[in-house]
Amino acid sequence: MHYNSIFDIIGPVMVGPSSSHTAGAARIGKTARVIFGRTPYRVEITLYGSFAQTYRGHGTDLALVAGILNLDADDERIINSLKFAKDSGVDIVFRTVAEEAEDHPNTARVFLSDDQGSLEVVGISVGGGKIKITEIEGFKISLSGEQPTLLVFHHDRYGAIAKVAQILANNEINIGHMEVARRSKGDQALMVIETDQDLPEATIEEVKIIDPVYQVALLIP
Image (cartoon, rainbow, N blue to C red):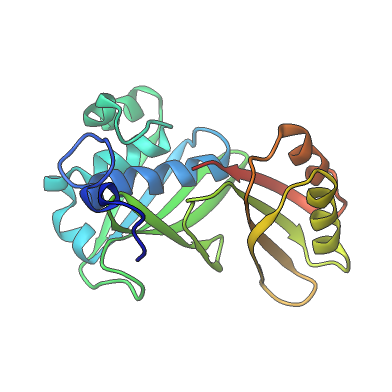
C-alpha cells in the first residue's frame, strides 16, 4: 500500500477506536450505499477473519451500518447507528465467518435490498481508513475510491465503452485508470473509470442515456 503522508498511517479524522476496523468499515458501508443509491430496507453483512473476531469491540458493526445510513467516519452519531437503522425501518443482519477471506482478513460482504432491487458489494479495509472494493454484483474489480470514480453498469454491446470514453473526452475529462468486467460475452458488464477531474452532473446524465447503459453511480473521494 502506497502512503502519501504520515496522516495516511495515523489515520483519518474519525470516531474511534480503529482506523482499519472503524473508519475503513464506515467507508465500505457508505460506498455500498452510494452505489445502491438509496436507503435499503434490509441489509445483510457477512464479516470475515479479523472483522468477524473483533467487530463488536472495535465498532465495526456500528461503522458499517453508519456508512450505509450515509454517515461519515467522523460523525459522532456512528455510536447510535444501529438504533438509527431500527428507527428508520432498516432491518440489519450480521453473519460471521471465522476464516479469512481470500484477499484480506478485514473483509466485509454487504448485501442491500429493497422492493426496487438489490446490490452486493465486497470491500476490505487495508489500514489508515483506506479501503479497496474487490467485488460489485459478482464483478471482480479493484477500486480504491481515492479518485472520482464512475461506475457504469451496461449490457455487453459493441461500442459501449467507446461511447462512454467519447463523452468524457468531449467534456475534457481525463481517464486515469479504467477496467471492465463482464459476466460473459453479450451479458451484463461493468466499467470502472477513475478520472483526474470531478465529473459534472451533466456529464453523468449523458452517460446514463447511452443505449446499453442501465445504471450509473459516481464515487467521490
